Image (spheres, rainbow, N blue to C red):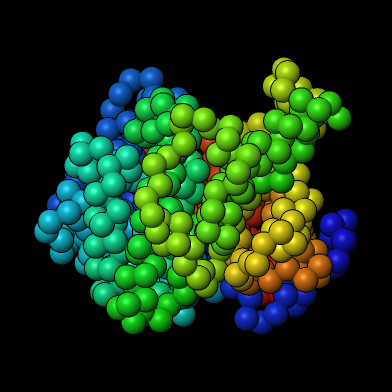
Length: 444
């Protein structure tokens, strides 16, 4: 199927076993930040510092999913999705990230899982979608090697309680973001700016992933286990050698650093040399631990990366189609990325765990006519079909996101949802994209 064949886009182009869903994340939708024993996370702390969040907002209410989850589960039923990807707030179930478990927190996720099962929707859980308990950050966070065991304890408790009710369990969402945006550029929580710290954090995230997978399998957990990475194809802005070299290095930092470790048991040599004194401390056996068999790899895709050694490359300045994040709309990059992964690595099955776009949505006459998002989703689902046709084993696709939500450093200014949230009343309004996705999933 070519990308231009809009009329050919049918659910029947995919196998009946293909999982269709939507994604959310705990801090972005739950709210109830101080209820039922939840402890603060690094994002609560980050939001409290003036200037960190574009609109000065925080996640204390967000979409109030904690109280309105039944309504949100009913939205899933209306959509006709078969799968729901969400994350657990570690500090909701273990306020300090160690020590006592918080039963009211676990009770919420028990209710959520029961509601999904009653509606015949598979649960895909992520353990760490960035909201680390602040109490652990106070002890060094992901820089402190002791966190590896803390994360393993958390993973094992969740596996013990809920593992049999999950279709898949991912350890981390986008470790590159936690490491680089949180500890190098400092624009995300916890807001540190030290490349050596960032690379050590990246390593500890990967080791904790491996340790957790070993422990979960030792428990006899049968659900599919994996990790979720944000990945892009990298293109040089020009043919110059400096642009080409920088492009290969940027690919190394985002793609090869994580996949070489996870699937080959080593870090890429060129990146290691480039980092110089900023390389992480790697203990004997760490890389063997990281290289655990994966039942799936989650891939989050939004756009390509165009790299320039000179002035920054801008899709918007060049008049190319962009989203409200000013990210280029480049669906063919998803096919390119998936084919490259399949060619370069011995890949496990792939889930597209996030794909979506922010646009300036407005409710008019009770409707949100987000035709740009409809076109975005259509073109990217076609890109997945093209990759499958090329032989790539993609088994799932999740739209980001079910709901407009707290978009991290952008606050509530950017809307990624296929369901509109009125942040004053918290009214949910399915957008045209939700109606289209539902029709697609019903074969219409």
